[in-house]
Image (cartoon, rainbow, N blue to C red; front, top):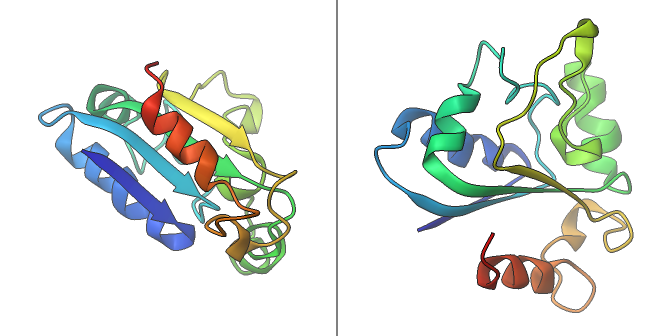
Length: 138
């Protein structure tokens, strides 16, 4: 089983992994331009259990882009926080020594996405990277 989410929809696979807590094995999770706070999956997060995410999925790919104006400008302006869809996970907030789940992989897609809708564009987006990640064993 593979889970996928885009923008605010990344909350669904993250919450599913948190709730499954290793009871069901997920081959991979692919997040595109995620609209969740940059520290929400860190080990001391109050929202999600990083260990549960690690126990449930073999790999979580977080595709992010600093060229994505939706996750870089619009939503952070409304939420007053950086998002995983912009620069990836940042667990060093507030001088913390937290870490993301061990299965978490930030993938910088800035050179391939000029905007939020570019992730899924067949010719210019990252579909080929996602397929490659599906096929490659970790």
